[in-house]
Length: 268
Ligand SMILES: [Zn+2]
Ligand SMILES: [Zn+2]
Image (cartoon, rainbow, N blue to C red):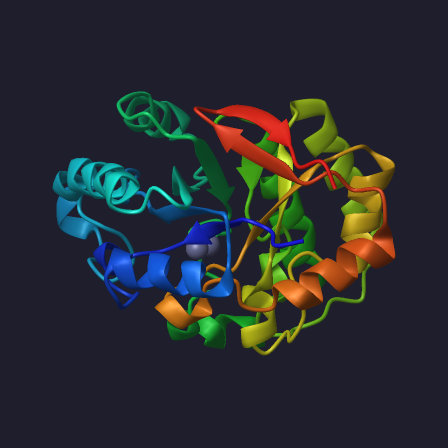
């Protein structure tokens, strides 16, 4: 079965390359029936002057992004193209995010924790902070934020839900306990977990989330969506065979699709 890729970036975010058409052409070449663009939301929690143009599109570009996805739907009627967006979860700034999300007809919203108390922990530029941080405390804090993101009701899906493992710094604390607690929070908030294959391309070398996390999702009835987190056209659908193996091994997990923020499921 060819799974839809719901996590594709575009050059607008300042750190991905290739035209939207090239991502779609790659999806078509793989035989995908459905994809979704999910570029980074403008850095709404910072003043305009403090926003890094290499991390996300400027606010004035958001309308153009939406229009471009809509135009691609007309150009490529043979593939379903969803309008998604990847939104940083920043506690205390929920209303600002909500106001932006209300303005456009998104099919789904991916919520991401890329910052723990102001530290962009997944950014290689700040990797030195790992040398002095308490890893157990970092993991606990990260998963608390992921749970809070789910509870914010801003998002349909929580992206790469164990991103904190990206650079392969491992804690000593019991991760299964944190996975269970987090999957329960997802179930209560009715959000999906994203199975994101970008983890295969970083030092962690494994799909986000870990198998134990997915087992917790299965036990709590949490559905998943699929995403490559492509920042280059040839990354579309990357590692989906591995993701499918993982899902099969865990078993009994529903794969979700979205249309205008309504969920439905792939019938296997
Ligand atoms: Zn992300
Ligand atoms: Zn992403």
